[in-house]
Amino acid sequence: MPSFLVFLVLCFSAAAAGSLFTADAVRTWYPTLKKPSWNPPAFVFAPVWTVLYVMMATAGWLTWEHLPAKVACLPMVFFAVQLALNVGWSWLFFGLRRPGWAFFELILLWVFIFLSLLSFWGVYWVAGALFVPYLLWVSFAAVLNFNVWSLNR
Image 1 (cartoon, rainbow, N blue to C red):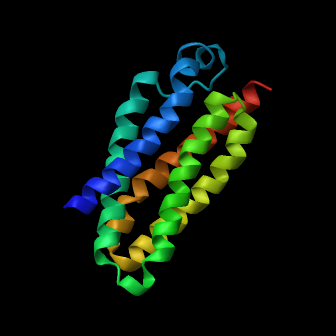
Image 2: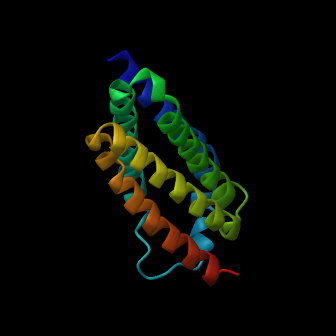
C-alpha cells in the first residue's frame, strides 16, 4: 500500500503545481474570455479533476504492482510525461494566458494519455480502463480549449 500513496502524492503534486497557475487567472482573466455556450460552470472542474487524479493514481499504482521488473520503464515514462504535460497545460493556458499554445500542448498531452492507457492496458486492463475517463475529459477539454482560443483571437 505504500506505493499507492506514492502515486497519490505524485498525482496530487501535479494537481497542486497546476493550481499555482490557475488560482488567480480563474478569478480575474478567465471570466473575461468569450466561451462557447456549452462551457461547463466553474464549480464542475474541481470535483471532476479530483476524481480523475485519484483514477490516475490508482491506474499508475495498479500498473506498477502488475509490471514485471524488466518492462517497468516504458509505461511509467508515459505516465510521468503525461503528468508533466498536464501541469504544462495549466502553465500555458492560465499562467501565460496563451490558449493557442495550450491547445497544441494539449494535443501532445492527449497522445501521452493515450500511450499511457495502451501501455497500462497491456499490463493490467483495469489500469488502462481507469485512464478512459481521463482521455475523454481531455478530449472534451481540447475542443473547449480550441473554441476559447478561436473566440478570443
